[in-house]
Length: 123
Image (tube, rainbow, N blue to C red; front, side, top):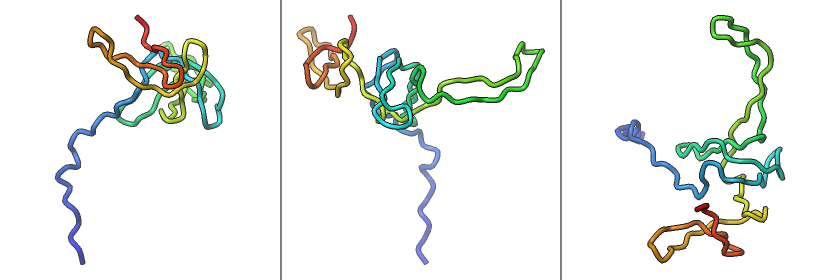
């Protein structure tokens, strides 16, 4: 029988994904149950590669009232996370696009739309 693989790297820190998306970008959902919806990115998790988009993947959570913490009971709705591969960045004209990078004259690296060449970073 073969030896089991050693677990010496089990607790090593995980590499963070390099995403071309940023917080407050406006994106369009391209697959899943909310396909076609647009929204602003609220949060990005680079460890798992998931993003939370405003008004997309709404989940319901049943909460018990807690008067000590001023929490009302009932059904609370909030956004769930979706995979970063299921969203596309929108240009200022509202067109979904892939993202590339370009160096400017001053040495800054800016995001550009692949199709139109439009600069996506706000100044």
